[in-house]
Image 1: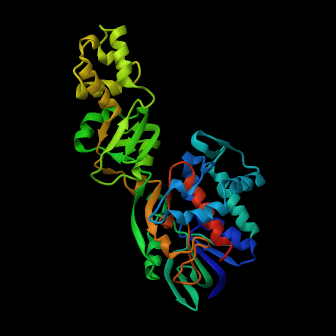
Image 2 (image 1 turned 60 degrees about the vertical axis):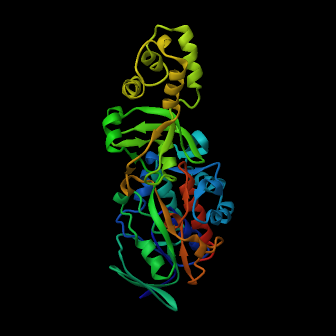
Length: 391
């Protein structure tokens, strides 16, 4: 039974970062991962280009029952720190909207960089290795189908349940419960939202259309694209609001957030009184969208014949479209997992359990979920770095 200073279960971004930092400190580190190929989820992130961080990272962009938990780690490992690591490895990157940073080439560059750093830090990685049992008697004991190991520190970096096709499992939550830690109820996050049966009939023909819109739920509001699909709505605005949505809730969508539609229609009524309203709306919105919504929201006729009160009502249909999803697309299509191991039972400085000495939890397995745009990977780097200083 081989002994290691540190065993990390999970070779995702947070686990690799933790291993690198621990290895640099001279710790003997083993990473165990059940997948035969490391970094499957990382390789497909950001459409394969890896949105590896965001210049605007603060704890305000994270959801948790204990949101202030993120502050310490995020302050100690900033986006600039990860950028410096990329520059060390000559990986080119660029900035897109809202401070999002992407690789110029491929997410595989990030994975190769992390694996090279692990190699230089003397980290051992066992792929295709399944955990059979985890226990503790003075040291942590880990039984796998490839052998048994012991460790002074055990790090759980197993990720959440999102993108289940990449091999996501609930293992991390099970280990947390085994050691008496609370797990906050999990749900798919950053996920498309599906139509009700009625909306499916109305809108399924719009699949493929993209519209810049403001999507709101309560105090939360996001202004980016929405994408119509065969099953519902997706796109950045919808993914963002999905983190706040719950079954039965109604979302409000403004498909012309940068235009006062009522004022616009009033102006067009004076300029083009004989033009059909449907024609005028196709000047500012996709024709297919107007074709569908016209039959639902107004009686098409020359705009000059439409009373101002009716124009106001029609305008509100487009600026305050009430959308009530039937359900989300589920974990298979979710980018993150909401909920997870309760951070109130961990040290925000070290990621160590306050109940079990030497037991650490990192990344997505925790109840800490970032907005879309590189925030979740920055949390992986930051939490992995924090734990790596102490394991």
